Image 1 (cartoon, one colour):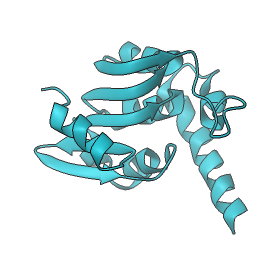
Image 2 (cartoon, rainbow, N blue to C red):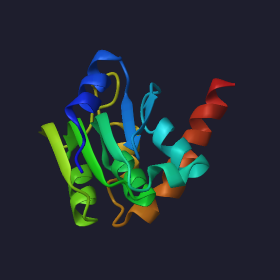
Image 3 (cartoon, rainbow, N blue to C red):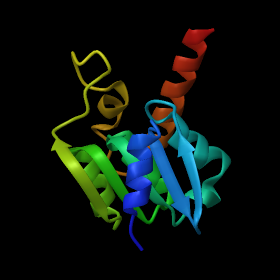
Image 4 (cartoon, rainbow, N blue to C red):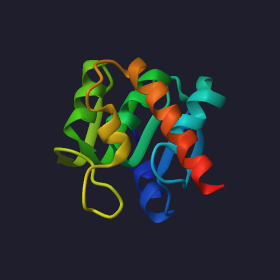
Length: 143
């Protein structure tokens, strides 16, 4: 099974950041960064296992969450070299439009903070507490 063109088209036409399909059941997501992947992994990990993923931007943090969630295959519009390495080294087929050395932050003046956090890790398991702490800090800074 492969990520379908319909799934990729939906990602683009629907303005989504992430589109997942499992057992013909499609779910779409709109939040930026790794928030939706982290939420799925912590709240509905069974849905991720074996899912086909179409994502706009995949950095090493997102790739680590996908590995932990045991997704079946990934399509990315933009993927970083560390993310590609993480997915491939864990046996997950990846298709992409553009490969970059690293993911930029939203201001395009440096590296994405999650990408930066995860650069030194060797395994997907090491990323989870780093991402969890990062998201908690982001949430508390909003309040």
